[in-house]
Amino acid sequence: MSMTRAWSDPVVAASASHCALITRREARNFYHGLKLAPEPRRSALYAVYAWMRRADDLVDDGGPDRVEQVAAFRAATERAFLGHTPDADPMWPALVRSIEDHDLAREDFDGMLDGQLLDAEHRPCRDWAEVRHFCDLVAGTVGRTCTRIFGATHPEAMRLSTDRGIAFQLTNILRDLREDHGMGRCYLPADELARAGLDVTSLLSWSDPGRCASFMQSQVDRCLAHYRSSAPLDGMIDWSCRPTLWAMTAIYGGIASRIAARPRSVTEGRVALPAASKLLVALRARLGWHRGACVP
Image 1 (tube, rainbow, N blue to C red):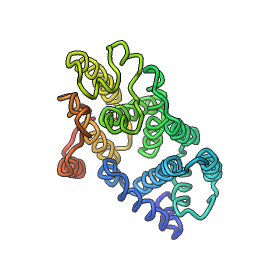
Image 2: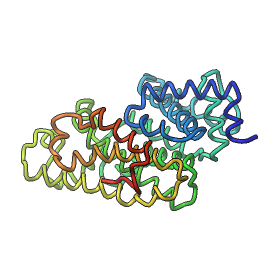
Image 3: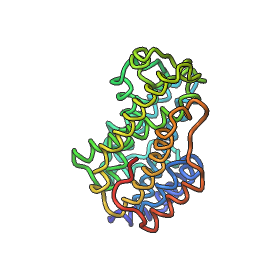
Image 4: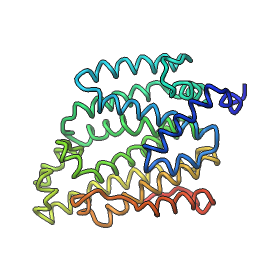
């Protein structure tokens, strides 16, 4: 059965519509890019997003038995990788179809769940190695999964998609610095903060402008380096998916560029692109008004 015919099955089609609604409602920065992908790859991306949304909700809302709930969800996901619909959740038929169509890697789904649990049991990251490990679990896994759906599976594409995912997550870490601190969390490397003579409180208050600016510049530079090192990825994926990846990178890279232009802005609030800017990115991508990788 062809990939397109398989998605026309009524059960799979209904599941795909369900996943699309979840993505439209929840994805915010990603939705404008994901909807540019051609069908049925678009529905596969929506199915993966719906799975991630479910995993995130289990961890955030699961209460004291979240570990048991995640274990049950992991077991259900294992059944999906064996080609079975695990339960009545309407997300599963589209995800099973996506796994089969694109040879998705179960270890990346396990990694995403590991990252969610690590986040729920948050403790400060001691150094860059711990920050990178966390970023790989919650975002590198997503990058590799999307790249498979985009049509590239060779090792170099996987390496580059890991870097792109880490770039996105480092953007999140910088953008959400104040918000995360308010929840008792910090994803900056503790040893680098200490060497700079800072802690998160003094950074957020910009108590020593010279030290704060220097530290933030080092973090922004690391983030931008991951965007730039991943630039060849855009030329490796199927041409029909390049507008999607370009738009997603333009949106997240646009946030990173705003932070780079004024690092102190992350101490004052959540840096974001205006809705009009996101729509313009999507329009440019849809009309083909882009060329090559869009990295800051």
